[in-house]
Image (cartoon, rainbow, N blue to C red; front, side, top):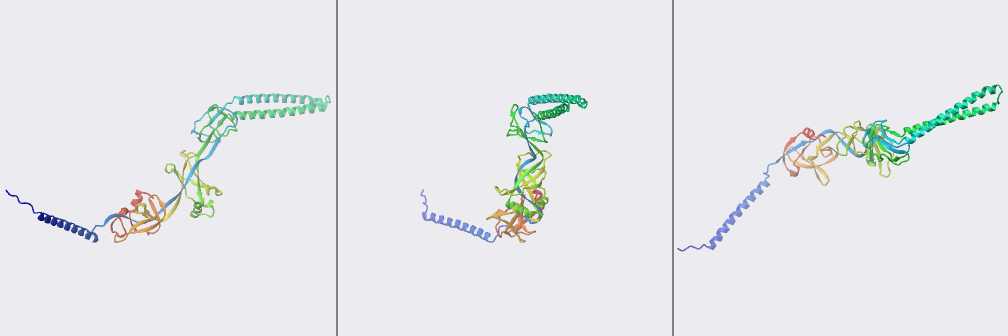
Length: 395
């Protein structure tokens, strides 16, 4: 049976017809998509918006601080000798009058015994001289012996009396030194490092103290203000003098090294009289109560000085974006159209910015989804309450 051979010209024609129809369909789809985009047929986005509101807000100035007890007492020996007892351990809490160290007392006990014996001998010599004066007095009165003998006896008595006083002072001094062999705590507080061990030779001239006793019922936090910060400080608070301004300062807070807030507030009490030329700063001191002993000498932290702002315009940071070192927000008009607007920030509190210029109370701004917006775009506003934001993230 004879088979028909395919016609090459007919095959090419069919192929061209298929390409033509496929291209026409593609062009039609692109034309429709372009027409839809040009006509703005995409629906507007539904985005959350908030209304700019005012509130009383505190901003804070923070300064690095170092802490010391209200008294850091160097515990030093007042007599020389070998340490034979250490009653406390490093870091222990002690009370006033509690024994801390003991120095070998045997040499000082012997000195006490010797001075007591010398005192008794001096008293005996004085009594003998007194007897001699009593014996010669009637004899002189009856002209039995000359007055010179009585004067000599009186002088011997006076010398013996002076020797008694001298011996008594020596005995008292020896007793004091014996008492110094036990070293007591001069205040309630915490014991620092103890560099000496039992058997160490210590003396009044030893450069290093036996330990450092920190009285910590109150803690002093020392911090510095630069000259610029000090000038700003003088403008922020009421008063004609620095002392008056310090009295008007609100209570300050202490941020600890782990960024936690110390539970009790402190008060700035004193300022140094002059600037430190080497660092260009002036020192302040704040005092914090420390009855629970949570703070120790040598701790570090930050002092936070609050600065209240009444009726400040507040916006959440999430509602802003930055462009060329400026802060912007998207303001929504009555038709739902958004416009990017620059704002001037005068402070920060938590997750919120305090606006100085660029917005007014009652303006609507986009809260989230800013990365999807452009100037002139329309949205469907979904209103959020600032009160609900404040509850979730307090000022």
